[in-house]
Image 1: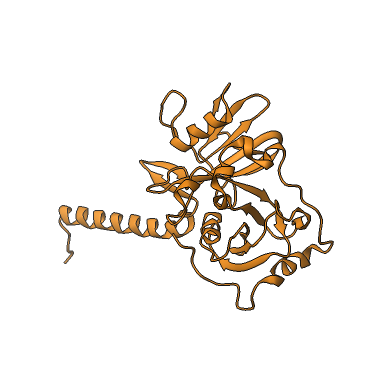
Image 2: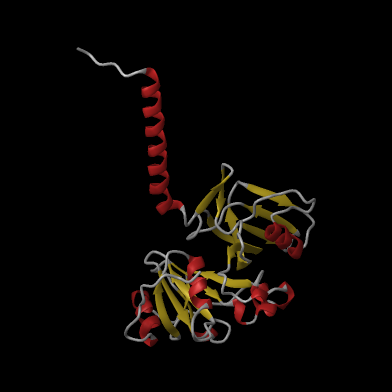
Length: 280
């Protein structure tokens, strides 16, 4: 004899199944995409666009442009006005926007604001663009000095500092590498994030203090940045930034590129790298 479930039972079971499936899908997806984006009110937002209960700062790259069609354009504005719009997530008329990064053109005095971030923490690419500066917002850890907010961390892709590495730590994102540098026991002047391996190498010197060992990297995928929190006030006013005229210049220190990373790590203690999580 056939047994038929009542309609309300079928409906209830279907609803329970749908809820469980959605929850499982969300948990599975979070491990992949949480470091890149968040979802708020149905809108995909790059991490760093909104710094809940934290202050923000910027990675700054000279002569670089983000390649994205999802852009808000503002003409006849200053770099300071452009940065204020991004920091506050409000345009010059007070309307709400979402800003994860922006480009400022010093020739046309124009500002382009994006929801996306560049790789490795984002999904967008960058290209060379003389005269432009690219700013990428990120959230500082709660341990950062309060006056470090809105500071500009000079960034250079595919560049390394050779000979002054102190520690190596495994992290997931460039933002976590910043947190590691800020929380080092020594004055961390700069760091390098080898993002394919997740290795964050912190340095006792920087390209500003030791320009002769600031080198190009053509093998490993890496981002170099300088710690603006060591002297926050010097990195907030664009007129004071020494890299505003074109950035640090790299030199080709190592003719054998495959050996460059090993050369970088020679000064690290034998027990490194440390597989520890970055502090919040």
